[in-house]
Image (cartoon, rainbow, N blue to C red):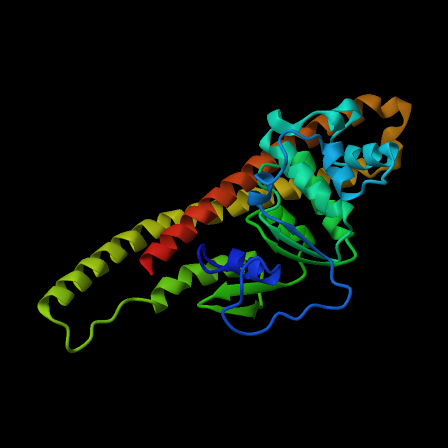
Length: 292
């Protein structure tokens, strides 16, 4: 789901999951529908005095301990970590636990609202790979460009109280955002009194000042996107080299080690670039909304 901040993306998902009542229309569920819903507020619903294993056991009291251990290990809770209470867990660990609880229940429809917030690079990549092979349907809200580029088949645009298919990619979407203020400039009516005219004049001046600020911010967003593409391209090229099976021969050990170090450095640079892009995109959307 694409759309400016405040357009109703999260509201739409909450309506689909029946967390919010519909204003009008119908919500029709398939016979075997099983929804898995994730948002950041679910971290607050976790029992801080319970362990990851206990959270799973509450869902499936008959689950075997080793089965639970193996499953949670896939989400980074190794060894006795899965039996520790989560009170002092980091935000990323709590997010991983919330995602693991959804995965345990094997839903056939995933509704994900900013699922990669608080996740480290390794877990973000693991989530991306999991979604690529996920056999069900996924509806996702995210500023994580890497996640969207590697898991999404179609874009839907949420704007002006409507949801429509968006024919384009993320670059086209940001171009669409930048064009919106050109079609939403305020117009004065013929019967405005002097106070209204002064208010409208002030509004136009403020909007003009914001539009002036938008231009350099738009350039920063575009520059950030280019930076993401740069590191992603270098990482793709490096991982092609790592796909050479002869590289793992004993006599090429040093060469392999060098490439693996470069891979780690590129992943860190890519992660930082994507975070910069997300922050700038959010700032751009917020300022764009003020112009409107």
